[in-house]
Amino acid sequence: MIDMDGRLGPLDDGRVAPRKQTLLAGFVIMARQTDAQLLQGLQLVPFTSAWHEVFHQPCWRELELVQLLMRVTRWQQDPAWTVQVLEWQRFWSGQVLAVTMQMLTEGLERAGLATIALGHALHTVVRLAPLLPPGAAADDPFVTALRHVDDEAGRLAEGQVRFLEQRPFGLERAEIEAALAEKHEAVSGLWRKFVEQL
Image (cartoon, rainbow, N blue to C red; front, side, top):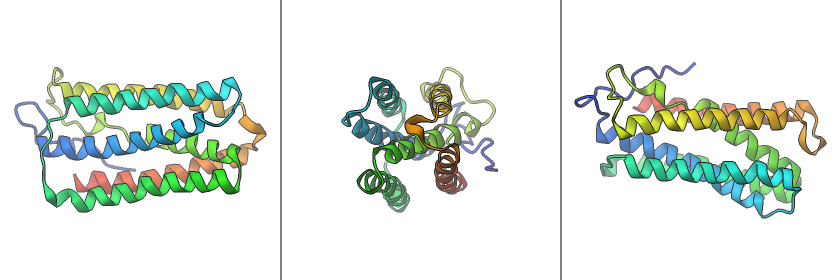
Protein backbone atom coordinates (compact mmCIF):
# COMPACT_ATOMS: atom_id res chain seq x y z
CA MET A 1 0.00 0.00 0.00
CA ILE A 2 1.35 3.41 -1.01
CA ASP A 3 0.86 6.22 1.51
CA MET A 4 -0.17 9.16 -0.71
CA ASP A 5 -2.10 11.33 1.72
CA GLY A 6 -1.22 14.99 1.34
CA ARG A 7 2.13 14.43 -0.36
CA LEU A 8 1.70 17.61 -2.43
CA GLY A 9 1.81 19.82 0.67
CA PRO A 10 2.63 22.18 2.16
CA LEU A 11 0.37 24.44 0.15
CA ASP A 12 1.05 28.00 -0.92
CA ASP A 13 -2.19 29.92 -0.27
CA GLY A 14 -4.19 26.82 -1.15
CA ARG A 15 -2.09 26.04 -4.20
CA VAL A 16 0.47 23.30 -4.83
CA ALA A 17 4.01 24.69 -4.99
CA PRO A 18 5.46 24.98 -8.54
CA ARG A 19 8.25 22.53 -7.70
CA LYS A 20 5.82 19.75 -6.83
CA GLN A 21 3.51 20.65 -9.70
CA THR A 22 6.45 20.27 -12.08
CA LEU A 23 7.54 16.92 -10.66
CA LEU A 24 4.05 15.40 -10.70
CA ALA A 25 3.05 16.79 -14.08
CA GLY A 26 6.34 15.66 -15.61
CA PHE A 27 5.86 12.12 -14.31
CA VAL A 28 2.24 11.86 -15.42
CA ILE A 29 2.83 13.42 -18.84
CA MET A 30 5.66 11.00 -19.59
CA ALA A 31 3.51 8.04 -18.51
CA ARG A 32 0.46 9.06 -20.51
CA GLN A 33 2.49 9.94 -23.59
CA THR A 34 3.91 6.42 -23.47
CA ASP A 35 0.44 4.90 -23.26
CA ALA A 36 -0.73 7.06 -26.18
CA GLN A 37 2.34 6.07 -28.21
CA LEU A 38 1.66 2.36 -27.76
CA LEU A 39 -2.05 2.74 -28.49
CA GLN A 40 -1.29 4.79 -31.59
CA GLY A 41 1.12 2.16 -32.87
CA LEU A 42 -1.46 -0.60 -32.50
CA GLN A 43 -3.98 1.44 -34.51
CA LEU A 44 -1.77 0.96 -37.56
CA VAL A 45 -2.25 -2.80 -37.35
CA PRO A 46 -5.19 -4.20 -39.41
CA PHE A 47 -7.39 -5.25 -36.51
CA THR A 48 -11.16 -5.56 -36.68
CA SER A 49 -13.17 -2.36 -36.26
CA ALA A 50 -14.00 -3.33 -32.67
CA TRP A 51 -10.33 -3.52 -31.75
CA HIS A 52 -9.58 -0.28 -33.55
CA GLU A 53 -12.12 1.52 -31.38
CA VAL A 54 -10.58 0.05 -28.22
CA PHE A 55 -7.22 1.62 -29.10
CA HIS A 56 -8.38 4.79 -30.84
CA GLN A 57 -10.53 6.51 -28.22
CA PRO A 58 -8.16 5.99 -25.25
CA CYS A 59 -5.23 7.18 -27.36
CA TRP A 60 -6.81 10.57 -28.01
CA ARG A 61 -8.08 10.80 -24.43
CA GLU A 62 -4.51 10.36 -23.19
CA LEU A 63 -3.25 13.12 -25.48
CA GLU A 64 -5.99 15.45 -24.23
CA LEU A 65 -4.96 14.80 -20.63
CA VAL A 66 -1.32 15.51 -21.51
CA GLN A 67 -2.29 18.82 -23.10
CA LEU A 68 -4.38 19.75 -20.07
CA LEU A 69 -1.52 19.17 -17.64
CA MET A 70 0.95 21.03 -19.85
CA ARG A 71 -1.39 24.01 -19.91
CA VAL A 72 -2.27 24.32 -16.21
CA THR A 73 1.04 23.39 -14.54
CA ARG A 74 3.17 26.16 -13.05
CA TRP A 75 6.52 24.89 -14.30
CA GLN A 76 9.78 25.40 -12.42
CA GLN A 77 13.17 24.41 -13.80
CA ASP A 78 15.68 22.60 -11.61
CA PRO A 79 18.68 20.66 -12.99
CA ALA A 80 18.62 18.49 -9.85
CA TRP A 81 15.60 16.62 -11.25
CA THR A 82 17.56 15.24 -14.21
CA VAL A 83 18.31 11.94 -12.47
CA GLN A 84 14.65 11.37 -11.66
CA VAL A 85 13.54 12.23 -15.19
CA LEU A 86 16.10 9.83 -16.66
CA GLU A 87 14.82 7.08 -14.37
CA TRP A 88 11.23 7.63 -15.54
CA GLN A 89 12.42 7.71 -19.13
CA ARG A 90 14.23 4.40 -18.75
CA PHE A 91 11.14 2.77 -17.31
CA TRP A 92 8.64 4.00 -19.92
CA SER A 93 11.05 3.50 -22.84
CA GLY A 94 11.58 -0.02 -21.56
CA GLN A 95 7.83 -0.61 -21.66
CA VAL A 96 7.66 0.54 -25.28
CA LEU A 97 10.57 -1.72 -26.19
CA ALA A 98 8.99 -4.70 -24.42
CA VAL A 99 5.69 -4.31 -26.28
CA THR A 100 7.51 -3.85 -29.58
CA MET A 101 9.50 -7.03 -29.01
CA GLN A 102 6.31 -8.89 -28.11
CA MET A 103 4.75 -7.76 -31.37
CA LEU A 104 7.74 -9.10 -33.31
CA THR A 105 8.27 -12.35 -31.41
CA GLU A 106 4.91 -13.32 -29.88
CA GLY A 107 2.38 -11.74 -32.22
CA LEU A 108 -0.06 -8.87 -32.28
CA GLU A 109 -2.43 -10.45 -29.79
CA ARG A 110 0.05 -10.43 -26.93
CA ALA A 111 1.37 -6.99 -27.83
CA GLY A 112 -2.20 -5.69 -27.70
CA LEU A 113 -2.76 -7.38 -24.36
CA ALA A 114 0.48 -5.93 -22.96
CA THR A 115 -0.55 -2.45 -24.10
CA ILE A 116 -3.95 -2.68 -22.47
CA ALA A 117 -2.44 -4.15 -19.30
CA LEU A 118 0.05 -1.29 -19.06
CA GLY A 119 -2.69 1.28 -19.56
CA HIS A 120 -4.86 -0.39 -16.95
CA ALA A 121 -1.98 -0.33 -14.45
CA LEU A 122 -1.41 3.35 -15.16
CA HIS A 123 -5.10 4.19 -14.71
CA THR A 124 -5.55 2.25 -11.48
CA VAL A 125 -2.20 2.75 -9.73
CA VAL A 126 -1.31 6.37 -10.52
CA ARG A 127 -4.04 8.19 -8.61
CA LEU A 128 -3.46 11.91 -8.23
CA ALA A 129 -6.21 13.39 -6.06
CA PRO A 130 -5.12 11.50 -2.90
CA LEU A 131 -1.83 13.41 -3.08
CA LEU A 132 -3.66 16.68 -2.43
CA PRO A 133 -3.56 17.85 1.19
CA PRO A 134 -6.63 19.27 2.95
CA GLY A 135 -7.19 22.89 2.05
CA ALA A 136 -6.20 22.59 -1.60
CA ALA A 137 -8.02 25.36 -3.48
CA ALA A 138 -10.93 23.79 -5.34
CA ASP A 139 -10.79 26.51 -8.00
CA ASP A 140 -7.07 26.10 -8.70
CA PRO A 141 -6.59 24.89 -12.32
CA PHE A 142 -3.91 22.37 -11.32
CA VAL A 143 -6.04 20.86 -8.55
CA THR A 144 -9.03 20.67 -10.87
CA ALA A 145 -6.89 19.03 -13.55
CA LEU A 146 -5.63 16.33 -11.17
CA ARG A 147 -9.19 15.40 -10.23
CA HIS A 148 -10.22 15.39 -13.88
CA VAL A 149 -7.32 13.09 -14.81
CA ASP A 150 -8.37 10.68 -12.05
CA ASP A 151 -11.98 10.68 -13.26
CA GLU A 152 -10.92 9.97 -16.83
CA ALA A 153 -8.52 7.25 -15.67
CA GLY A 154 -11.36 5.54 -13.84
CA ARG A 155 -13.53 5.56 -16.94
CA LEU A 156 -10.72 4.25 -19.14
CA ALA A 157 -9.94 1.45 -16.68
CA GLU A 158 -13.59 0.38 -16.58
CA GLY A 159 -13.69 0.19 -20.36
CA GLN A 160 -10.55 -1.92 -20.42
CA VAL A 161 -11.95 -4.34 -17.85
CA ARG A 162 -15.16 -4.77 -19.86
CA PHE A 163 -13.12 -5.43 -22.96
CA LEU A 164 -10.79 -7.94 -21.31
CA GLU A 165 -13.74 -9.82 -19.83
CA GLN A 166 -14.59 -10.82 -23.42
CA ARG A 167 -11.26 -12.69 -23.62
CA PRO A 168 -10.10 -10.88 -26.77
CA PHE A 169 -8.15 -12.85 -29.39
CA GLY A 170 -9.24 -16.01 -27.61
CA LEU A 171 -6.51 -15.58 -24.99
CA GLU A 172 -6.91 -17.61 -21.84
CA ARG A 173 -8.11 -15.84 -18.71
CA ALA A 174 -4.97 -16.91 -16.84
CA GLU A 175 -2.79 -15.21 -19.45
CA ILE A 176 -4.82 -12.01 -19.25
CA GLU A 177 -4.61 -11.98 -15.45
CA ALA A 178 -0.86 -12.62 -15.57
CA ALA A 179 -0.32 -9.70 -17.95
CA LEU A 180 -2.35 -7.38 -15.73
CA ALA A 181 -0.49 -8.48 -12.60
CA GLU A 182 2.92 -8.03 -14.25
CA LYS A 183 2.24 -4.46 -15.43
CA HIS A 184 0.52 -3.54 -12.18
CA GLU A 185 3.56 -4.62 -10.18
CA ALA A 186 5.97 -2.72 -12.46
CA VAL A 187 3.98 0.53 -12.43
CA SER A 188 3.36 0.26 -8.68
CA GLY A 189 7.09 0.03 -8.03
CA LEU A 190 7.86 3.17 -10.02
CA TRP A 191 4.92 5.09 -8.57
CA ARG A 192 5.83 4.13 -4.99
CA LYS A 193 9.36 5.40 -5.47
CA PHE A 194 8.12 8.62 -7.04
CA VAL A 195 5.61 9.31 -4.24
CA GLU A 196 8.29 8.73 -1.60
CA GLN A 197 10.52 11.27 -3.33
CA LEU A 198 7.80 13.91 -3.15
